[in-house]
Length: 566
Image (cartoon, rainbow, N blue to C red; front, side):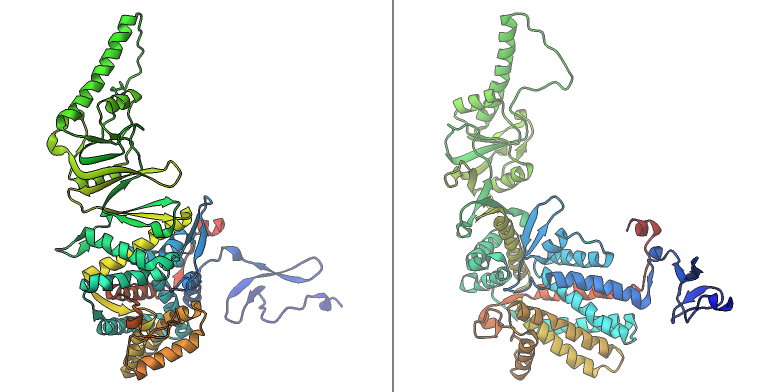
């Protein structure tokens, strides 16, 4: 009976007590408890974090897909917004792909690559940040199927490169050149309203598009067709309606005059821009002053007064009639300025000070002794405006000498709307800038992706190497954009996409897209839905490069300490 008491060894065990799976992987050591039941000791299984080969590809692609899926639903005119709560409890409601990904706390290393991808699209183009991530996620998903069929990842990446070149060529073929100045810059306005169409502010997109176009054109450098965005200041103020948003050809400073009785409007302004405080100098060392008599005190007081008088005389002698100062004033100085009828503004930030200097052609003066008439900035009018019933005041500096700086004053019901409107205007401004640089436009609504997809399908049939499979996969991956647009608009995604594809081929019109807003026509040119050609080409190139990089990773090694923390 003793022989029977031995535990029955499960199948797959070898005499040495180690357990192996079918693939030859070592699972751990076999041991027997006091009742004779066998159990397996896993060999520090928690520390085995190394992924190789297909496993590594799978893990990486799943992580990237998860990111792409997150923002897929925020694409298109009917895309949903995302609410991101930051670690400090600050809440952001946004539709902008780059902002969502930047604020999300992403831990996975491959997922971080996609976050960087949307950032680089944002820095380079400024619009299309959601599309580029969705595209990259879709390309990886298609690559996964091919890897599981046994195709080498590098052959896939190579096929993707070829397909990307075909797509870029096709998109440049279907692009139409627009005359940006015709019909009161209608083309720029339509492109800007396409960029705004998928945002919260879509109800007011025409008005905001006009503001955006005017803002960009007033600061654009006509000789080299580029725009310095630092000159467009977007200032937000809560309260009021979104319709009250306006463009001010000048600069807004969120400050008021330092003394309540100073004049509220100053005409023909010559302003002294100072970065020195309006108060007596303070010694750096600790000191104690003993004043024994009233005379001494009077002398001290006289000295201080004399100091202020010298400062104010320096300003008056230069011919200035407005002082803008980066620092504070003593109450004494404020009173003296008022008595000498010298309007002044205090505590103006450094960036605003620089903008004011650029716009008015003035110089920033660090010491009173250096103040001369040549260093003064000139503006037509500086006025204080108040909002609503509150005591909110702002200064508007208009008709500046080098009126290259403009301000967009955004109004909205709450802080979130104002912040989101600011981000939307940034996207629209970028869109207008891209068209100024390169006036070719391509259709939106998934039409350009579909045209590229059809071109790649045709090219892949002529390719005799293995790459034809990965080219087809690229073509299928591009279909995700029209599908996501249709899905977010509540239409049948595959049905709409198939109908649109058939129509593009039968009418041989590459401008047929998804009719998201149910206007009745699917021709994107008639719907005025288009974007800069540069943006689309950049999306394809960036997405392909990131996908190629992710496909080349076949081994993920995580260091011991990282694992133990995890």
